[in-house]
Length: 373
Image (cartoon, rainbow, N blue to C red; front, side, top):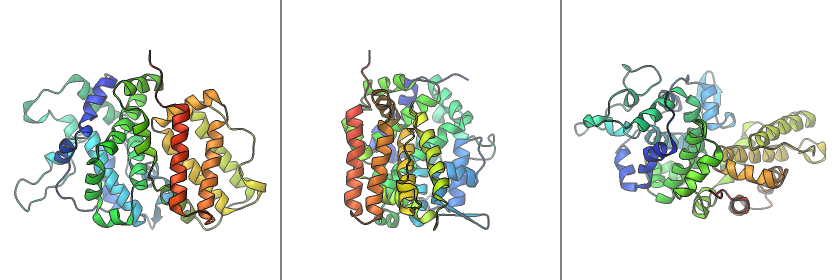
Protein backbone atom coordinates (compact mmCIF):
# COMPACT_ATOMS: atom_id res chain seq x y z
CA UNK A 1 0.00 0.00 0.00
CA UNK A 2 1.33 3.44 -0.95
CA UNK A 3 1.32 5.83 2.01
CA UNK A 4 -0.32 9.18 1.19
CA UNK A 5 1.79 12.27 1.75
CA UNK A 6 0.63 15.28 3.76
CA UNK A 7 -0.05 17.34 0.65
CA UNK A 8 -2.38 14.65 -0.68
CA UNK A 9 -4.25 14.53 2.64
CA UNK A 10 -4.61 18.31 2.69
CA UNK A 11 -5.76 18.39 -0.94
CA UNK A 12 -8.31 15.67 -0.18
CA UNK A 13 -9.81 17.69 2.69
CA UNK A 14 -9.39 21.25 1.49
CA UNK A 15 -12.99 21.49 0.26
CA UNK A 16 -13.90 22.05 3.94
CA UNK A 17 -12.56 25.60 3.58
CA UNK A 18 -15.23 26.38 0.96
CA UNK A 19 -18.70 26.63 2.57
CA UNK A 20 -20.42 26.53 -0.85
CA UNK A 21 -18.61 23.31 -1.77
CA UNK A 22 -19.44 21.77 1.60
CA UNK A 23 -23.12 22.67 1.22
CA UNK A 24 -23.17 20.99 -2.20
CA UNK A 25 -21.83 17.79 -0.66
CA UNK A 26 -24.36 17.72 2.18
CA UNK A 27 -27.76 16.06 1.66
CA UNK A 28 -30.78 18.31 1.11
CA UNK A 29 -32.90 16.18 3.44
CA UNK A 30 -32.11 13.41 5.88
CA UNK A 31 -34.25 11.47 8.33
CA UNK A 32 -32.83 11.06 11.83
CA UNK A 33 -31.55 7.49 12.08
CA UNK A 34 -31.81 5.34 15.21
CA UNK A 35 -28.53 4.86 17.04
CA UNK A 36 -28.18 1.27 15.81
CA UNK A 37 -28.63 2.20 12.14
CA UNK A 38 -26.27 5.15 12.39
CA UNK A 39 -23.64 2.90 13.95
CA UNK A 40 -24.02 0.45 11.06
CA UNK A 41 -23.44 3.29 8.56
CA UNK A 42 -20.29 4.39 10.40
CA UNK A 43 -18.98 0.81 10.53
CA UNK A 44 -19.41 0.57 6.75
CA UNK A 45 -17.57 3.84 6.22
CA UNK A 46 -14.69 2.90 8.52
CA UNK A 47 -14.36 -0.65 7.24
CA UNK A 48 -12.99 -3.70 9.02
CA UNK A 49 -15.00 -3.18 12.22
CA UNK A 50 -18.16 -4.79 13.56
CA UNK A 51 -21.03 -2.53 14.68
CA UNK A 52 -21.82 -3.06 18.34
CA UNK A 53 -21.25 -1.79 21.89
CA UNK A 54 -17.47 -2.02 21.65
CA UNK A 55 -17.30 0.15 18.54
CA UNK A 56 -19.81 2.63 19.97
CA UNK A 57 -17.72 2.87 23.13
CA UNK A 58 -14.69 3.86 21.04
CA UNK A 59 -16.74 6.36 19.04
CA UNK A 60 -18.53 8.22 21.85
CA UNK A 61 -17.30 6.84 25.20
CA UNK A 62 -18.76 3.98 27.22
CA UNK A 63 -20.25 6.39 29.77
CA UNK A 64 -22.50 8.08 27.21
CA UNK A 65 -24.80 5.21 26.24
CA UNK A 66 -26.51 2.19 27.75
CA UNK A 67 -27.18 -1.38 26.67
CA UNK A 68 -30.64 -2.57 27.68
CA UNK A 69 -31.67 -6.09 26.61
CA UNK A 70 -29.08 -5.97 23.78
CA UNK A 71 -30.47 -2.63 22.52
CA UNK A 72 -28.22 0.44 22.37
CA UNK A 73 -29.70 3.68 23.65
CA UNK A 74 -28.55 7.17 24.56
CA UNK A 75 -29.93 10.48 25.78
CA UNK A 76 -31.33 12.89 23.18
CA UNK A 77 -28.29 15.17 23.35
CA UNK A 78 -25.89 12.29 22.67
CA UNK A 79 -28.07 10.80 19.92
CA UNK A 80 -28.22 14.20 18.23
CA UNK A 81 -24.45 14.75 18.46
CA UNK A 82 -23.87 11.20 17.20
CA UNK A 83 -26.02 11.79 14.10
CA UNK A 84 -24.58 15.27 13.45
CA UNK A 85 -21.04 13.92 13.74
CA UNK A 86 -21.98 11.04 11.41
CA UNK A 87 -22.99 13.51 8.70
CA UNK A 88 -19.77 15.53 9.07
CA UNK A 89 -17.60 12.41 9.27
CA UNK A 90 -19.24 11.00 6.15
CA UNK A 91 -18.41 13.94 3.89
CA UNK A 92 -14.84 14.04 5.24
CA UNK A 93 -13.99 10.39 4.55
CA UNK A 94 -16.28 10.02 1.52
CA UNK A 95 -16.99 13.51 0.10
CA UNK A 96 -19.27 12.29 -2.71
CA UNK A 97 -21.30 9.93 -0.51
CA UNK A 98 -24.44 12.05 -0.27
CA UNK A 99 -24.10 13.48 -3.80
CA UNK A 100 -24.34 9.96 -5.21
CA UNK A 101 -27.41 9.31 -3.07
CA UNK A 102 -29.44 12.42 -3.94
CA UNK A 103 -32.93 11.62 -5.26
CA UNK A 104 -33.28 11.48 -9.03
CA UNK A 105 -36.96 12.51 -9.02
CA UNK A 106 -38.90 14.89 -6.77
CA UNK A 107 -40.25 13.04 -3.76
CA UNK A 108 -37.96 10.04 -4.18
CA UNK A 109 -35.31 9.59 -1.50
CA UNK A 110 -32.70 6.98 -2.20
CA UNK A 111 -30.77 5.17 0.56
CA UNK A 112 -27.47 6.73 1.57
CA UNK A 113 -25.70 3.50 2.43
CA UNK A 114 -23.34 1.89 -0.11
CA UNK A 115 -24.41 -1.02 -2.25
CA UNK A 116 -23.59 -4.52 -1.03
CA UNK A 117 -21.79 -5.46 -4.25
CA UNK A 118 -18.58 -3.97 -2.84
CA UNK A 119 -16.27 -5.75 -0.38
CA UNK A 120 -17.71 -5.80 3.13
CA UNK A 121 -16.81 -2.69 5.13
CA UNK A 122 -15.55 -0.64 2.16
CA UNK A 123 -17.89 2.01 0.66
CA UNK A 124 -18.60 1.81 -3.04
CA UNK A 125 -17.05 5.23 -3.64
CA UNK A 126 -13.68 3.90 -2.49
CA UNK A 127 -13.62 0.95 -4.84
CA UNK A 128 -15.34 2.35 -7.92
CA UNK A 129 -13.79 4.64 -10.51
CA UNK A 130 -14.38 8.38 -10.02
CA UNK A 131 -17.59 9.84 -11.38
CA UNK A 132 -17.78 11.43 -14.82
CA UNK A 133 -14.78 9.49 -16.11
CA UNK A 134 -12.24 11.55 -14.18
CA UNK A 135 -8.89 9.95 -13.43
CA UNK A 136 -8.25 9.71 -9.71
CA UNK A 137 -4.90 11.05 -8.53
CA UNK A 138 -2.49 8.52 -7.03
CA UNK A 139 -2.44 10.45 -3.74
CA UNK A 140 -6.23 10.36 -3.39
CA UNK A 141 -6.30 6.66 -4.26
CA UNK A 142 -3.73 5.92 -1.54
CA UNK A 143 -5.84 7.84 1.01
CA UNK A 144 -8.91 5.80 0.11
CA UNK A 145 -6.94 2.59 0.49
CA UNK A 146 -5.43 3.71 3.78
CA UNK A 147 -8.83 4.60 5.22
CA UNK A 148 -10.30 1.25 4.21
CA UNK A 149 -7.44 -0.81 5.69
CA UNK A 150 -6.74 1.14 8.91
CA UNK A 151 -9.99 1.35 10.90
CA UNK A 152 -8.21 3.17 13.75
CA UNK A 153 -7.95 6.20 11.45
CA UNK A 154 -11.69 6.48 11.07
CA UNK A 155 -12.45 5.69 14.71
CA UNK A 156 -10.13 8.37 16.04
CA UNK A 157 -11.32 10.96 13.53
CA UNK A 158 -14.98 10.28 14.28
CA UNK A 159 -14.38 10.52 18.06
CA UNK A 160 -12.75 13.93 17.72
CA UNK A 161 -15.60 15.21 15.53
CA UNK A 162 -18.20 13.83 17.95
CA UNK A 163 -16.57 15.44 20.98
CA UNK A 164 -16.47 18.82 19.27
CA UNK A 165 -20.10 18.54 18.17
CA UNK A 166 -21.23 17.46 21.65
CA UNK A 167 -19.57 20.54 23.15
CA UNK A 168 -21.48 22.68 20.64
CA UNK A 169 -24.87 21.00 21.19
CA UNK A 170 -27.72 22.80 22.92
CA UNK A 171 -31.43 22.12 23.37
CA UNK A 172 -32.05 24.42 20.39
CA UNK A 173 -29.74 22.47 18.10
CA UNK A 174 -31.35 19.19 19.20
CA UNK A 175 -34.76 20.56 18.24
CA UNK A 176 -33.52 21.85 14.89
CA UNK A 177 -32.17 18.44 13.89
CA UNK A 178 -28.81 16.91 13.01
CA UNK A 179 -28.70 18.02 9.36
CA UNK A 180 -29.43 21.64 10.26
CA UNK A 181 -26.77 21.54 12.98
CA UNK A 182 -24.20 20.02 10.60
CA UNK A 183 -24.98 22.75 8.05
CA UNK A 184 -24.56 25.43 10.70
CA UNK A 185 -21.19 24.10 11.89
CA UNK A 186 -19.73 23.46 8.44
CA UNK A 187 -21.20 26.70 7.13
CA UNK A 188 -18.83 28.59 9.43
CA UNK A 189 -15.41 28.60 7.82
CA UNK A 190 -13.62 29.00 11.16
CA UNK A 191 -15.31 25.88 12.57
CA UNK A 192 -14.80 23.93 9.34
CA UNK A 193 -11.08 24.71 9.58
CA UNK A 194 -11.02 23.17 13.06
CA UNK A 195 -12.35 19.94 11.53
CA UNK A 196 -9.83 20.28 8.69
CA UNK A 197 -6.89 20.79 11.06
CA UNK A 198 -7.87 17.86 13.26
CA UNK A 199 -8.35 15.59 10.25
CA UNK A 200 -4.97 16.51 8.73
CA UNK A 201 -3.23 15.93 12.06
CA UNK A 202 -4.93 12.60 12.81
CA UNK A 203 -4.49 11.16 9.33
CA UNK A 204 -0.92 12.43 9.09
CA UNK A 205 0.14 10.85 12.41
CA UNK A 206 -1.59 7.54 11.83
CA UNK A 207 -0.14 7.02 8.35
CA UNK A 208 3.37 7.35 9.75
CA UNK A 209 4.48 11.00 9.91
CA UNK A 210 5.97 12.35 13.14
CA UNK A 211 4.10 15.01 15.16
CA UNK A 212 6.85 17.49 14.25
CA UNK A 213 6.48 16.80 10.51
CA UNK A 214 2.71 17.16 10.64
CA UNK A 215 2.67 20.34 12.73
CA UNK A 216 5.34 21.95 10.53
CA UNK A 217 3.22 21.18 7.47
CA UNK A 218 0.11 22.52 9.21
CA UNK A 219 1.89 25.73 10.21
CA UNK A 220 3.02 26.29 6.63
CA UNK A 221 -0.61 25.94 5.47
CA UNK A 222 -2.03 28.19 8.21
CA UNK A 223 -3.76 25.35 10.07
CA UNK A 224 -2.21 26.34 13.40
CA UNK A 225 -2.31 29.51 15.42
CA UNK A 226 -4.31 31.67 17.78
CA UNK A 227 -7.45 31.64 15.62
CA UNK A 228 -7.54 27.85 15.60
CA UNK A 229 -7.14 27.71 19.40
CA UNK A 230 -9.92 30.27 19.78
CA UNK A 231 -12.52 28.34 17.80
CA UNK A 232 -11.39 24.95 19.08
CA UNK A 233 -11.31 25.71 22.81
CA UNK A 234 -13.45 28.74 23.62
CA UNK A 235 -17.26 28.91 23.79
CA UNK A 236 -17.69 25.16 24.41
CA UNK A 237 -20.13 23.54 26.83
CA UNK A 238 -17.60 21.47 28.77
CA UNK A 239 -19.84 20.90 31.81
CA UNK A 240 -22.63 19.17 29.91
CA UNK A 241 -20.34 17.35 27.48
CA UNK A 242 -18.01 15.94 30.14
CA UNK A 243 -19.07 16.23 33.78
CA UNK A 244 -22.81 15.62 33.44
CA UNK A 245 -22.41 12.28 31.66
CA UNK A 246 -19.92 11.07 34.26
CA UNK A 247 -22.32 12.10 37.01
CA UNK A 248 -25.24 10.24 35.41
CA UNK A 249 -23.29 7.09 34.52
CA UNK A 250 -23.49 5.55 38.00
CA UNK A 251 -25.13 6.30 41.33
CA UNK A 252 -22.40 4.99 43.65
CA UNK A 253 -18.63 4.76 43.58
CA UNK A 254 -16.30 1.94 44.55
CA UNK A 255 -13.95 2.13 47.52
CA UNK A 256 -11.48 4.99 47.78
CA UNK A 257 -8.55 2.61 47.16
CA UNK A 258 -10.14 1.15 44.02
CA UNK A 259 -11.12 4.55 42.62
CA UNK A 260 -7.68 6.04 43.31
CA UNK A 261 -6.00 3.10 41.56
CA UNK A 262 -8.36 3.33 38.57
CA UNK A 263 -7.83 7.07 38.16
CA UNK A 264 -4.06 6.70 38.53
CA UNK A 265 -4.06 4.15 35.69
CA UNK A 266 -6.05 6.52 33.48
CA UNK A 267 -3.75 9.48 34.20
CA UNK A 268 -0.60 7.41 33.71
CA UNK A 269 -1.83 6.11 30.36
CA UNK A 270 -2.77 9.60 29.20
CA UNK A 271 0.52 11.20 30.24
CA UNK A 272 2.55 8.40 28.65
CA UNK A 273 0.88 9.18 25.33
CA UNK A 274 2.13 12.75 25.73
CA UNK A 275 5.69 11.65 26.48
CA UNK A 276 5.53 11.96 30.27
CA UNK A 277 4.66 10.05 33.44
CA UNK A 278 2.51 10.48 36.52
CA UNK A 279 3.86 11.72 39.85
CA UNK A 280 3.25 9.81 43.09
CA UNK A 281 0.83 12.43 44.43
CA UNK A 282 -2.64 11.04 45.31
CA UNK A 283 -5.49 12.26 43.15
CA UNK A 284 -8.42 12.01 45.57
CA UNK A 285 -8.44 14.44 48.47
CA UNK A 286 -8.00 12.83 51.88
CA UNK A 287 -8.29 9.32 50.43
CA UNK A 288 -12.06 9.39 50.95
CA UNK A 289 -14.90 8.35 48.64
CA UNK A 290 -16.46 11.52 47.23
CA UNK A 291 -18.42 10.81 44.05
CA UNK A 292 -18.31 14.47 43.00
CA UNK A 293 -14.52 14.43 43.29
CA UNK A 294 -14.29 11.14 41.35
CA UNK A 295 -16.65 12.30 38.59
CA UNK A 296 -14.72 15.57 38.29
CA UNK A 297 -11.45 13.68 37.80
CA UNK A 298 -13.01 11.38 35.22
CA UNK A 299 -14.42 14.38 33.34
CA UNK A 300 -11.04 16.14 33.38
CA UNK A 301 -9.26 13.03 32.08
CA UNK A 302 -11.95 12.56 29.40
CA UNK A 303 -11.38 16.13 28.22
CA UNK A 304 -7.60 15.74 28.14
CA UNK A 305 -7.87 12.41 26.33
CA UNK A 306 -10.01 14.03 23.64
CA UNK A 307 -7.59 16.93 23.18
CA UNK A 308 -4.62 14.53 23.06
CA UNK A 309 -6.11 12.95 19.94
CA UNK A 310 -5.85 16.30 18.14
CA UNK A 311 -3.04 18.72 17.32
CA UNK A 312 -3.12 19.71 21.02
CA UNK A 313 -1.12 16.53 21.60
CA UNK A 314 1.93 18.33 20.20
CA UNK A 315 1.27 21.17 22.63
CA UNK A 316 1.17 18.70 25.54
CA UNK A 317 4.43 17.13 24.35
CA UNK A 318 6.10 20.53 24.19
CA UNK A 319 4.88 21.27 27.70
CA UNK A 320 6.18 17.96 29.10
CA UNK A 321 9.64 18.71 27.69
CA UNK A 322 9.61 22.04 29.53
CA UNK A 323 8.06 20.89 32.80
CA UNK A 324 7.61 17.18 33.54
CA UNK A 325 4.46 17.45 35.66
CA UNK A 326 2.74 20.39 33.96
CA UNK A 327 0.14 18.24 32.19
CA UNK A 328 -0.76 16.53 35.46
CA UNK A 329 -1.20 19.98 37.00
CA UNK A 330 -3.46 20.89 34.09
CA UNK A 331 -5.63 17.80 34.72
CA UNK A 332 -5.85 18.76 38.42
CA UNK A 333 -6.91 22.29 37.49
CA UNK A 334 -9.58 20.99 35.11
CA UNK A 335 -10.90 18.60 37.76
CA UNK A 336 -11.05 21.47 40.26
CA UNK A 337 -13.14 23.54 37.83
CA UNK A 338 -15.56 20.66 37.22
CA UNK A 339 -15.87 20.22 40.99
CA UNK A 340 -16.77 23.90 41.39
CA UNK A 341 -19.59 23.36 38.91
CA UNK A 342 -20.72 20.12 40.60
CA UNK A 343 -20.80 21.78 44.03
CA UNK A 344 -22.69 24.76 42.55
CA UNK A 345 -19.96 27.15 43.56
CA UNK A 346 -20.05 28.56 40.02
CA UNK A 347 -22.74 28.42 37.29
CA UNK A 348 -22.00 26.38 34.18
CA UNK A 349 -21.52 29.50 32.04
CA UNK A 350 -18.69 30.71 34.26
CA UNK A 351 -17.03 27.29 34.56
CA UNK A 352 -17.25 26.69 30.80
CA UNK A 353 -15.62 30.04 30.14
CA UNK A 354 -12.87 29.44 32.71
CA UNK A 355 -12.15 25.94 31.37
CA UNK A 356 -11.88 27.27 27.84
CA UNK A 357 -9.64 30.13 28.91
CA UNK A 358 -7.40 27.78 30.90
CA UNK A 359 -6.92 25.47 27.91
CA UNK A 360 -6.45 28.42 25.56
CA UNK A 361 -3.80 29.95 27.84
CA UNK A 362 -2.06 26.57 28.07
CA UNK A 363 -1.97 26.37 24.27
CA UNK A 364 -0.63 29.90 24.02
CA UNK A 365 2.05 29.31 26.68
CA UNK A 366 3.44 26.10 25.29
CA UNK A 367 2.65 26.78 21.66
CA UNK A 368 1.11 24.41 19.15
CA UNK A 369 3.01 26.04 16.28
CA UNK A 370 6.59 24.75 16.06
CA UNK A 371 9.65 26.62 14.83
CA UNK A 372 10.11 25.02 11.41
CA UNK A 373 13.43 24.84 9.64
